[in-house]
Image (cartoon, rainbow, N blue to C red; front, top):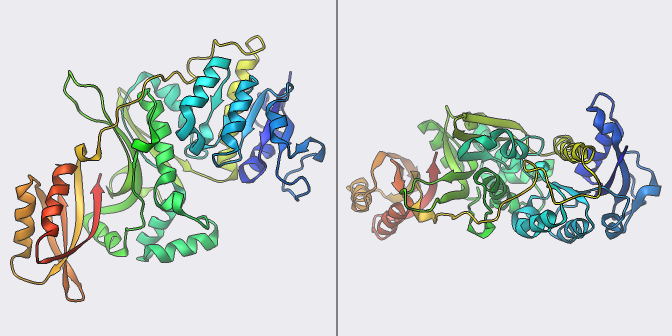
Length: 436
């Protein structure tokens, strides 16, 4: 028995996927039963790094997803369209789908999974988050018996590379970004990465799996790293922290008679140096999961690239093929409960004003007596308790004051900042970051 694969896209990940499928030696025996049946590309004549017969190449992607011979459609095109439409058409023709497309899943999961459940087919997405790091299936299966309390991850390699370089070299964001683009670690248009959109897509997917409900992407708070400066990296170092772009999904404490609420957010964060995520550097990703009774576990590895991502893609194909070997055809609605998506309700996302956390803030002020006292008074008026207040130096004629708070409700902290902005002695708030 062989299982016929319709591969959409032969770029970096598509090529890596084809290489695994074409060299099954030393891998799981089931890989030998996976056949690349048709491959959809933009240009058949383009030279390729993998030996694929031109006879199975086509520019007609729709013909692949509707071909009755194809068992599994593997979507590696990226972007929203035509990927979304092709996934839905494949499902309509009772094809199982494997995708690495976090943007499509985070935005159209309800539409896609409802269609898949109706047709009795699987949509698998291990490669959509964390590259080769196994996290999707563990959340569905191994960790499924736990009450997940929080997921905290470094899920974007580009921003982690930039912040690591800034930390190691004392360089500014713009300089490191330009270098990262030259080296191919950052896109020509890096907006999705550096503004936190990519990480927001990924944490929406992880939160949905961890907490058993759908997530509205527009409710996920995201903030990028473009405002993180070399001064903040330096002060974080002196205070015992490193700065990372974290994606967080966490249950909020609520009264027993209140509905459960989640925090789902992406933002640069001061991470204590002793925390396991603090040592994750360069383009590597890591996902830190806290649950009951398992406690704390961390998944770490390469978060992108042909090999790692292709590994995750083929693992999903194997999962589907293993089921197809043991069930009658065509697919029936009796889907494997640990592999299918069964979420029907939407999780309630708490507004950021309700978040309770510590804050780091850097102020530029006039060098005049009593400034620190005025800051302390404004914070105290809003119930903000300060852990430390340090005048660190000068920027020109302006004094630089760094404040770290104890845990505080974000709404109260924002009210204190509004009061501080009205002080004559305060020139500006140069930086504002949350503390893990």
